[in-house]
Picture 1 (cartoon, rainbow, N blue to C red):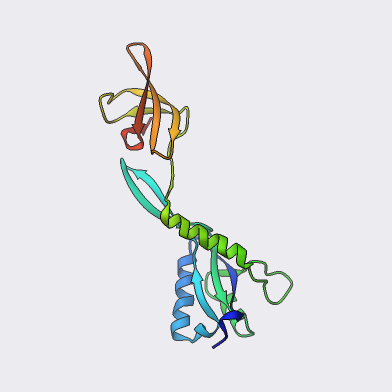
Picture 2: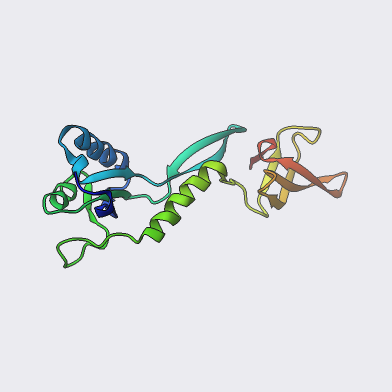
Length: 182
């Protein structure tokens, strides 16, 4: 087996949506066909996103870099064509006129991997609302009132909505699941 110091990170370009299949194929080949001599790790950079569906928070995982798969490999003669010819792989990133692609700098990999670790701790909230958008209050004492979003407080997962009550504009602080788009 090759020394760990000979392994460098490379980026495979894959058909978008097929990243998991590429990873699965390479990992299977590592176990069964002896590719573990050339490849040590295969990663798909993902992030966790909180979405609101039907008034409930749903945690979904999506690709951080769609269409790309990170591979830690030692690109010796027989490894390059094997990885290049994996089904659903379009080629290596930075693969130009040279025969062997250039590896990704370790600082970039650390940034991407650090970003992945950071995402596990802090979810990215996907906000389905925009300032100035008209919404309908669906919960609470102002149920049924229509209002306009004045402010989005992402850290609290709340909205400041201006509704008209008896001809006067009244600001309300509502959570994302207490309103629906009109």
